[in-house]
Length: 164
Image (cartoon, helix red, strand yellow):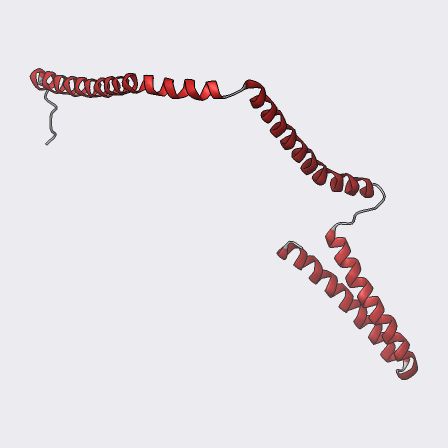
């Protein structure tokens, strides 16, 4: 069974009138607040103007301008020093960057791993040349190549995983 919507004009008019009345009350309250604020200001304005005129008469425009100019010069000098202290190192880095070749960090880590394994390999071959037979020397060479390839793979993995 569906409910039907009944249109009752008397109830709709009563709701509209109630909303209008509520809106009028809010507007009246706001107008009263504004009137109170204006009344308070008009009572206090002469006192404020008296105090301001006394303060203004004590100020000397030349003294004020001199103090303001001095403060502005101090601030400008301080800002210039701060700017130069930040810009000079950046300019030096930019000038030195023209003379060098930068490598990506991944390439640097791979080169470091290869260099370490080459040092270990040379030391081991020198030692093995005096103590080990040639068959064992071949196995040792293969072992170092496999170890260096595994370390390069580990460096690439760590670089991508840990954002070196």
